[in-house]
Length: 362
Image (cartoon, rainbow, N blue to C red; front, top):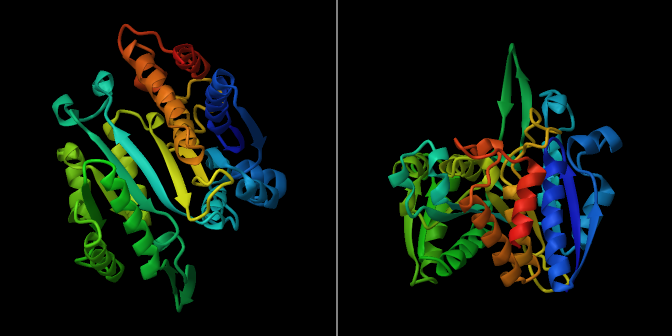
């Protein structure tokens, strides 16, 4: 196995957590005599400071010709100016669009030994294991017009929620396929009682279900889904939702596990890499956490598990991905803790130290 992995570490804790994920991937590389080439490029705030662009041309070119992309995080107070023409998040949206990444997969699984970290009662967490499939290229984030207009003495801000039917059809098909490989339960999340895009979303969900008779479809309003995620999260198997709803619900779901630092994600499109697998972008779900950047206390597990997803989906290395996931779970079961999941009586490990423990178990 030879692979080119583009690393866009980004801002804040991004460089720290991606460095640890690379250490884990290099361990796999040595263990199995593979050849991984890591190519480092800029994105986000640091790219704006260096090149004036949130997504430099060379970064995009490298990403499009790679076998997979590993992302840290983007953004921070330094660039948090609502009047700025270019923001770090523009780089993230741009790379998703340019790479045609229309689907984001976020697995959420409650780890029993970390039940104390969750704001929910332990009994609500038993058996929680679901996947959120989020549409990435449509909706409010990309719809036009997107502008401000002066109307007399008032200023009107405009964002447009827009979806083409084909955008909904492809994400729905993928979600049904994901559900087929799990417990065959799919919850389609919308706001069909108010939004026209959601009415079309629901109609397409019902039509797509006819081609997947083995999967049970339920249509759930987004406010109801948000409520059920905290009242009865174990009922979910796969959720599919549009861009904005997915952004919010996945952050809510992350809280179930006790820390956003624990969860990975993978984004896919229609493009394949040279191995005939998914050309994907892999990243932890957390942000850049600028308040703890450079302190060696960030939890790298979400990024390490993202690297495992990279091996599984972009390189077809299922066994190696499982080894990483098992090593992470063993480390946690045996008392390894970072500051965000600290527990009385257990030593708090640094970013580097907990990766050392995971690598030992590999």
